[in-house]
Amino acid sequence: MPKNESEWRLVARDYEAKWNFPNCIGAMDGKHIAVQAPEWSGTDYYNYKQFFSIVLFAIVDANYNFIYADVGCQGRISDGGVFNNTSFCKSMELSMLNLPPDISLPGRTVKSPYVFVGDDAFPLLRNILKPYPGIQEKGSANRIFNYRLSRARRTSENVFGILSSVFRVFRKPLLLDPEKATNVTLAAIYLHNYLRNSPSKKIYCPPGTLDSECSDTID
Image (cartoon, rainbow, N blue to C red):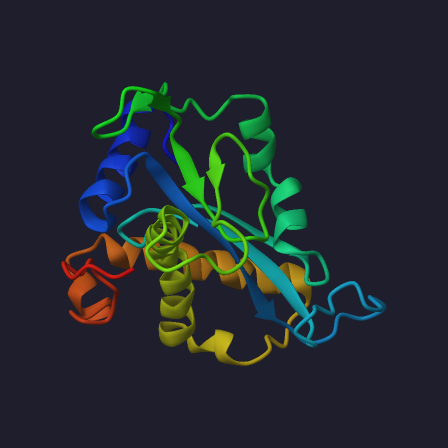
């Protein structure tokens, strides 16, 4: 994870340059890693999608790299519940993330905080943004905001897609206990970041594999 204000600003700079979303310092989301039913666990690992799983909670940057991951929570717990029990959440509550001070958005005078973007599963906090609920009127400011936020947030979903596509062990339930399944998932995360930043990254993620900013206006 970024350790100081300068490193967080680098993440925000990439989100603004690549996804036209200023002050964004990460996209957060959760993924269910399917596992075989753990012994004597009852329904602890049985999720709302009706299979047994552990949860991967992750925050990713604009370049599809993991900057934080928490793995191993029982599948029955929601993304919001998993988030509330992470060290990241506790650090945010205690203002220990060393986030940069608020700045004015382009064309504005009122200062705005740096934020993580997520979906409806997460709480709306000073440093967490999520979409307006419900169906928004076409052309409205709320609809445009939702589109832009969802476009920036899509980086986390794409990272999960890369993991399942390349590390095919995730395409079916892991025949391991939750602790070993957690270690396998963490190993894949480390390998992903290594390959994304190695000279062979174009082989790992060939051109056209990932989403990119489109110049066309969509509302």
